[in-house]
Length: 384
Image (tube, rainbow, N blue to C red; front, side, top):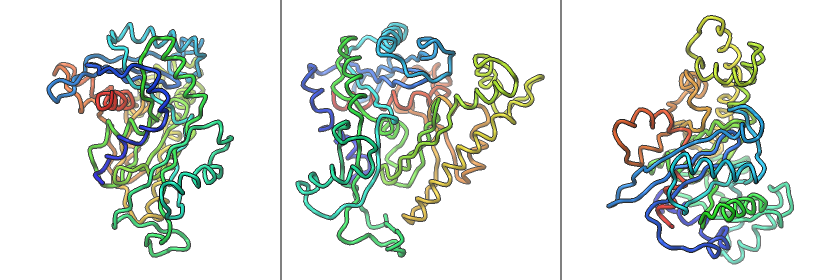
């Protein structure tokens, strides 16, 4: 199987009821809507003669819509979220009503498991029972999907009972995905109330892979530095093999600056973006000392996850890709490479689109923040 091919079909059955709700008329343009805790992002893409054209994009912070500051994470009420999305579509001049929305990682679970090597019918009856071991809520509260993970000869599975790294006979690896039904219902309501046609929803990790990876068969660590947490995935031959959450994010960095300098969060957020880990302007010389321990913690935990994966699978993770709003912190790459010991790069999802040359610098800087939104819209162009 060619790398990443199966992602196209992963959620074709998942949320199938949604496709019956909306018209499936072919759309010239599609949007990708990434709903995060600290901001909501949207892009609009169009396919023209085989090329993907960036038509428009935009972002609004959630904080002001929830009575908080820009940069603070807030779980908006549905009414406030509807207002934000309506404002965002207006400000970004989104002209299409058809697109794809993200399912946040916090509302989902992705895990690979070993199950008996049986046919798909028997496997379908086993998976709900096995899923109970990993899902902390009733199975009735989630939507399940699953996929057999291809096992090329050079991907070896090792564990305590199989120290030589040989595939375990009689077992097959399954990628198990669970999405909380409440998240699906809330997105359905949002789309309906805003008169949007959203026949597809996708977990944000899969969108990021689509926009930032380029059919790379090597093992890569993808880290999404969000507001309240950092989401990490290890992708090997196009397959998510590890999904891990690190409970520190960009908001924690701003709070550390706020405490260190005794300034309000709003000012701390501004200083963090201006100073980062590089500049040391007068009166802000302890910003780096406030931020660095948290950044080092994030990447130290990421490196621990990588080492564990490499030991168990006899595969080398040779690259880290950083995405998310927190990834644009000045000086972050240097610390990241120091902690993980392999090349680290920013995700550049806009590279998969065409845009005016004068926007090149702006899009390069904004790229990590729009990885999910671009990935969603790319899927929309493929399937809607």
